[in-house]
Image (cartoon, rainbow, N blue to C red; front, side, top):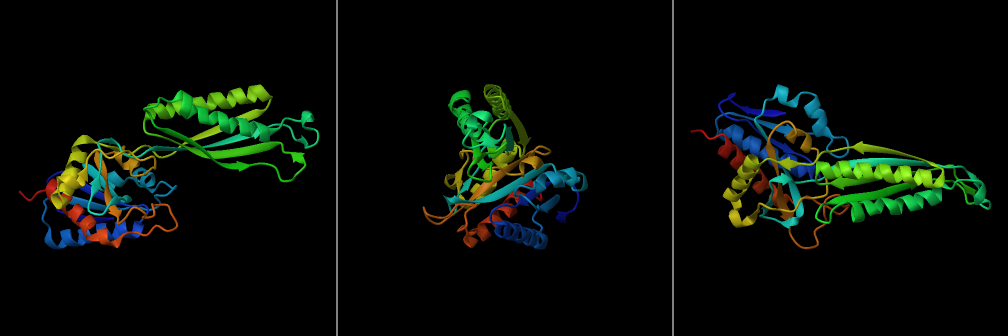
Length: 308
C-alpha cells in the first residue's frame, strides 16, 4: 500500500491494478506514484492499491474484508486493465456493468453401480450426466431472454475407473456467467429445477452446489465520466469508447465497487489483429503502453484532486 498526500482536502482517489499482465499494471501504477510523489500536482490524499490474488482467490474481497477502506478511507476507487483486443492508444469504458458475475457449480449424480453388461440392474449416472449436460444448455437458449446475457459451461466430468463397470457416481463441475443479478438468480433457480427433475426422472440423487463467486463490475456514472475525461485528455475524445460492450470475464475489483463508487477502464494494448488474448499461453504484456497507462493515473489524480 502506497499513500501520498496531505489528508484530506477533497475526495480520495484510489488506483488499483491487477490481472493478466500483473507486472505491467504494477509498473504503470508505480510510475504514476513516483511522478506524483516528486511533483505533487494535487491537493488531497491518493492511495495506491497493489492487490494480490486476483485470479480465483478474490484478493479484492479479502482486502475489503480486512478493512481496506477503514484503514485507507476513500471516496472513490478506480481500476484499469490492459485489453489486447483493443488497439494501443485507445481506452474503453461504460457506465453500469462492465464485467460478468462469476459463479461456479458442482453437481454430484449418485446412482447405483453395476456391471456394464447388465445396466438394467443399476442406475447409470454416466447416462444421466449426458442428459443433464444437454438440459443445462436449455437454460440460456430457452429460459433467458435473447437480449440478456448468460453462459453455462460444464468444464469437468469425473466418473468411473474401468471399462466394464457402471460407476455409482459422476461429478460435473463448471462455471456460470451473467451480466445482471436478477438473471443470476434466475439461472441458479433453473439449474436447481433441472437437477431435481433429472433425479426424479431416473431415480437417482442429483445434488447441486451452486457457489456465488465474483459480483459484476458495475461502474458508477460520475466516476465513469471522470475516468473517460482523464483518458480523453491524453488521447482525445475519438480514442475513448464510452459504450464498450461488457465482458463475460470477471474481475474482483467488483468487491471494492460494492463499497465505494468508482470505475474500471480498459487500456488498449493491441498491435495487430492476431495479438494473443489474456489467459493465453502466448500472451505477452505490451510494454509500449506503460507510459500512457502511468499518464492516465496522473491525469485522473490531477483532475479529481486539483490544487485550486
